[in-house]
Image (tube, rainbow, N blue to C red; front, side, top):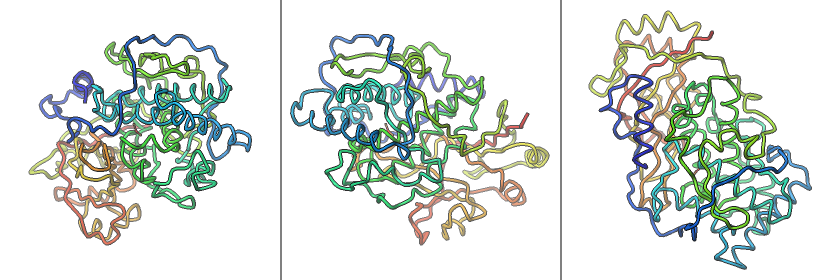
Length: 458
Ligand code: C2O
């Protein structure tokens, strides 16, 4: 993590919740150090030109599964041109391999000093990346109205990969990738692709890591193959449709409430991201330039995640006092139990785990339970003590450079709070790989600290 990012996010975080600074020094785990040689740096970036106003017409990014036949043809032609360019001129930064390598390069190494995962760069960097990628695709097919589609996995009817990416499911399709674990007929597990706990946040610094962990990370893990590790993820064209949806959810969150805003610090707003544009010019763009994508970046989203998820309106989250870690177990003191019982009916309660310690040797989606027996049965959502999911995405498949582990995760306790309060002992959390149906590798989940957070509906 870039030290400035870390310092900024830490300072804001501390200011917001009045937290003990010492507990927050290491919010993210990047076990890896220098990143491997798998991806070259982007090219000659010596003469950066600042992004300037874009005056193309505003066009909609649409759900990938609802594209018309001619839109699918356009999308495929654009990626075909990008793939062809990588062969005809391997040095051209607009070719597909270079495009994929920009992502790889910024996973923490290969010379890049920035880390675009696990930091507050995550949303603006990926938004700018898609924007320039989209402009290049449009340029290659001579259509400035071209916009990327999005894979709206929160829509229960769209849990399969969008058909354009899997039909035909072979290399004649420029949107195909042969490494995917998810098959063309497979549905994403319903617990992946759930942005509800992210959308319920009232502060960007909470929203961003929530969205990044799951659903963002969980969908990476489920698609698998190249998508299952960050250094290779952008070699799969589905990556861009996936990130378009992550970007849409940021847009949805901003649109959902007037108080949902981007960070106000100059450090965040003036932070710049660099990319080659459609004319091979190295451009820099500031975070503040990408916040309002519709007037600035010339796209809007057709459809909102809250067409499928109802977001309740919260004014703020309060941290319940007297919930703490005692001997690595969660203790809800009697006073806190009373508070929670009194507010239960008219509020939503999240259990927040800060800095969970998870294995960084493989990409995985882990089910979390507060009962060991349930964890062993590993029935998932159906189990009474199931809390939610934590997603770990490797930086690279060989696991030489560690993994991105969520620095915080909220579990919505609303349907199970009463049962949890009826259990009077201190609470242990257990995690088990979602695919481990035997529940044979259940482990106790260590973490740095815990909060119980309550939001009242106004
Ligand atoms: Cu930069 Cu979804 O990864």
